[in-house]
Image (cartoon, rainbow, N blue to C red):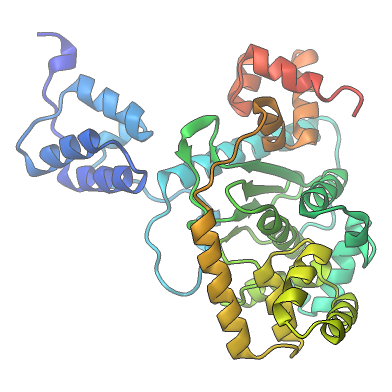
Amino acid sequence: MGNKSVILQLHPETLRWIREEAQADMADASVIKLLNDWELGTKKPTLSQVQKLSHETHIPFGYFFLKEKPAEKYSVLEFRTMDSAYHGEASQALRDTIFDMLNIQDWMKQYRLHQGYEVLSYVGSLKNEKDVDAVSAAVREKLDIDIAWFKQCRDANHAFKFIREKCEAVGILVMMNGVVGANTHRPLSLAEFRAFVLVDAYAPLIFINARDTVNGRLFSLLHEIVHVFVGTDNLFNADDGDEHFSKSTETLCNKVAAEVLMPKGDFLAFWDTCKNEHEDTMICIKEAGRVFHCSLTAAARRAFDFHRISGTEFAGYVKSFSQAYINNKAQGRGGNYYNTMQSRLDRSFLKALADSVLAGRTSYPEAFRLTDTNNKTFTHLVGTLEGK
């Protein structure tokens, strides 16, 4: 009898946790059935089966032999801001993504230390500041943008790229993906999170869930930028413009993001002019979304904050916007493979990695692992940096 046919004894508590993880990660029905059979004791697991299921569920092989489920390792998950209600354990897809980003952040930190970079003094510099206007002004100054920066941008996509480049200029890494690594069969859930930030004095990193709308990504990016200044890790899951937070820090970050995106003076001037021309409030909400590159929910929220619409009107608009999003979110998104790959990675990180590989400090296999690429795709991505 080969060693792969050896019957193993696995702990029922661990098996239940693995089955629940697999179900949450939408594993194949045959995988769930086999795990359920092991849990009930109607079948016994073999070594080859455990190896196969470890691969299919993306759960490390060694975890199958633990006496209880592993403790959560990632402090960012303590900052989930969905609201005060319990939303269950973080998915394996989210945890794997955080793990990947921590590896990238650690690599970039070591690279910058080796290159003699100093700490980024603005990281955590506003941890005791509670005034929205003061924080907004500090963020604008550091990013080198004026109050009406949005007027320079053609649309939300251009605005997102504009702010992302400003982040690059001050040392903030901005990564973006809609799947785990390069695995298109492991989508990230927008219902679970829109973005997260890992704060570090040398290499702060923001990750954006690419499943979100372009407008949503922009708001999430601004929200997480504020967290870098405040100095706290964060996992963001609120709708842009939503204020249902259980922590004062989240309320502050949300309000600053809204102020940077839709400055009070500009917004009120726009809104009052629009209302003088149009009786239909919805027209002004849509126009605000276009002018300020924000979602309809964020625009409506801003109008409500400034008493331009009532709470009842706001609630009605948000309900209709949410339903419209649900009806449309199933539409597929195509695109050029290499453009998608390029958008996933922070450009300063890719430049640093290419430089390190060329200098012989980082091996090609390590570069491929960090970027989820191979020789062909990595070479192509590095080539896109030329002339930029």
